[in-house]
Length: 133
Image (cartoon, rainbow, N blue to C red):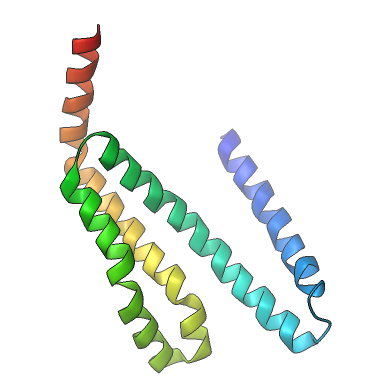
């Protein structure tokens, strides 16, 4: 619960400081508007990127090479087709949101892989705790 409150508070602060931070570099309203828009998309992307990194780290920690490789490849391989497709359909807005879409897809893949490999991870965790204790 505390984590969600902290996340909400940090999101609020970042939203406030996006506008203020953008004003340090330009006073042009059009630049400020697009800069704020881009930073907002990047912040959302960072949230999903954090979960993607968490899933990848969990898989690595338990020696699960297949899901680790899938996650690493998905993050890199999906990005370029998503950029090309979204840019051709939505123009600049598609280009801006392509990283967020890629990270969301990769995070969903990580969730699915975590569910699929969850039993294996739990079994490895149980075996490690029995060996240690």
